[in-house]
Image (cartoon, rainbow, N blue to C red; front, side, top):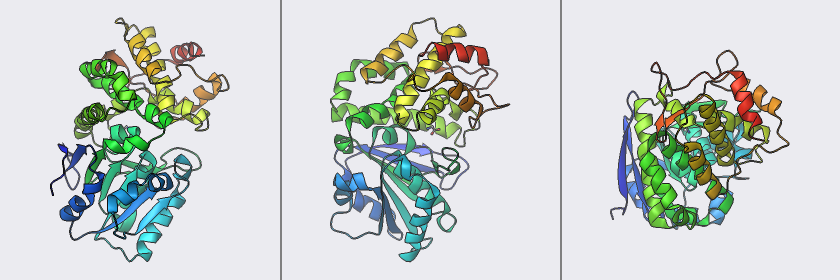
Length: 369
Ligand code: GLY
């Protein structure tokens, strides 16, 4: 039976296969398995999920009574996002006598997608991965675009690969079981998409904020489609982040430093919210923010329940030191993504990431305590 889903095709130049389809719908998780089987009838599936997804009943909804070899990440979350988990997945695939004719199915949030995608990228030199994201952050961002990887003991995503999915299936109803804190924090990536690329989407988000917070599934389906359209537009132009894809890191430079300094007690989205306010302050200091947009962005983030100040226990000096180690730093100082206006990211001399002096960054950080 055909899936009741909207479709969006993503074309990715320079990689094989050269594109994939994102399907977005409500309550389609139970019908996906037949679709996956019929699309890849000759491939043997291997599922990667986590203990919370199993508890929420999503694994059972997906496969029904079929027995599929499955690796369950436990504990769920960033704490398991390391190379040992990948080693265990690869070895479990081998002990299940899976070969290059296998397909990895990632059912879960950003951590599951990153780990499973990376395992798929390296298993027998690469097998396809299907992403079935179940969190706001994964549905808006991490399941699309092919970034996969795990953390080392030194830094985030130190082991990684660009490995585009074979398909993405987004059932917004899976968000129904997500806890409130994660649900809200993941929506920050949607606000980011609106801020960098689409002022109309920003208006839509503001107007529909109550429906979004109440998990109105029709509205969530609309925002899932808009997020994927925006993300696809960027990824298609710059799949391996040579330049334009950096705009997806809006708010992430200071955000990552805050996340890391908090020792991951702050969620990614909570840290990026602070990073977006910081970026807005940089824009003000650089004379790029005459239209009151920082106040609008801040207002929306506050409605999502985000804090807009840096926790007092995180010291400015710590953040400055972390910024020097940013993976995109040049001469131990990062480049920043800045808005030109709401819905437009600044591009100067064909570059999307910009130098901002240490003094200005320090002043903006001071302002965030
Ligand atoms: N999450 C940012 C990117 O996919 O490039």
